[in-house]
Length: 436
Image: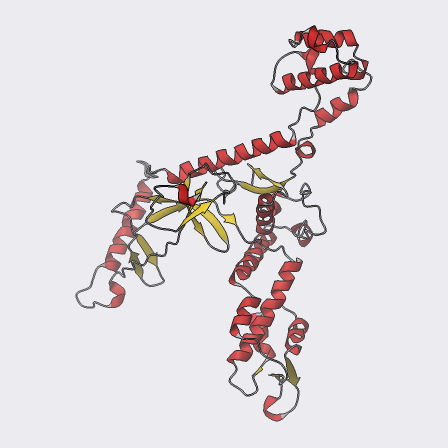
């Protein structure tokens, strides 16, 4: 608890927050301290590094270069989404598009200086070219009337006198910045997939999460599974215990096992780990020497003797109790990888149980998280320079000379454009989380 810690950690940036449960995909150790960057969209671990005196930032515009001092430097880990991205043509996306259009219309009425306020259809169509005219007219009819004739109001949409225009605060509540970011993230990913050649039939597969099976993703292409509307929902559902994540795979953003693959997999290990060989063996058990129902009692006792079970322990047991012990011990030996083909044929249920798979899942999450944190917190310098890059070095030298000539003050003209602009503003915002 917070009150029982004598010396709470004092870090230069961030606010201390005591977390009884891990805010990340992997569990945190008791007393572990980890800084994090967090907002309403995502949460990500960050690691503070020692700033070298030679580090600085150059910003390039069309005509100028700006030098910016760096006071602090942090490396940011994989983002943990806190906001679900809606799928293309989904119910949530359509509702947002409707509310966004309505909020834009309300703001146009607020900007109008006429009495009563009025707007034109063309102003709305310029901002929403993808919307049909009928849908825009439907939103306008809710708050205004179209004046076909009437002097100064001809061909204008005039706000009705009996309609109360929502306040700016009410409009901001209608459409939040987080919803806008999620919607435009969906549109950007949708366009990239369309450019890659995916059609709408494949693109919209599994988007309607209310109608489709949440764990059935076998028919979806790998690139579609990496879309933000799939990865964000899979991650948030995994926190609720509705599913598990693939952890390692094609959706790992690092590509080297230092990140999590936010791809949904079934949380039923018996269903997802079923192998053809296992199914085939199960069909061939009946009527063979591996059928436990045909195992004689004397042979079962001999098998238990080989396992180290004395006769005194099985003397008062019934036949089926002895058969159950043979099956249990054979399964345990086969799972441990011990040799003995004669005993392995009586093994059943070689797959992990629900509890065992859950423990293995948590262990894998912790391993990936530790590898990621170790890589991001490392202080060693990585250099890409080598002796054979002669042409690249000449390009760098030429760029350096051009940069120096642009930044050097001129004797005849010392203007604002020739002087480097020093911007030392600090935009780092961090939080600190401590697991108890």
